[in-house]
Image 1: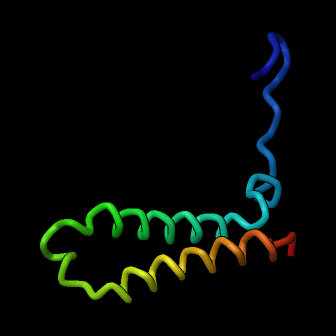
Image 2: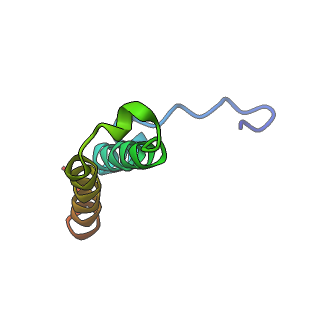
Length: 77
């Protein structure tokens, strides 16, 4: 927001507008969304055909991604 009579400020450079680790956070959210969707839609007939180890594997994958994100976060390059 520019003050009256003053020119607007230039935009920040791209290196300052993206937080570090955004790819890792996005991947984590995608994995958890897939896991939640799979568990919520499990009662539907086509997903009932999936073996339990597939559902468990996706949930385990989500937990591993969360632990990696928590214990080893990405830093600035």
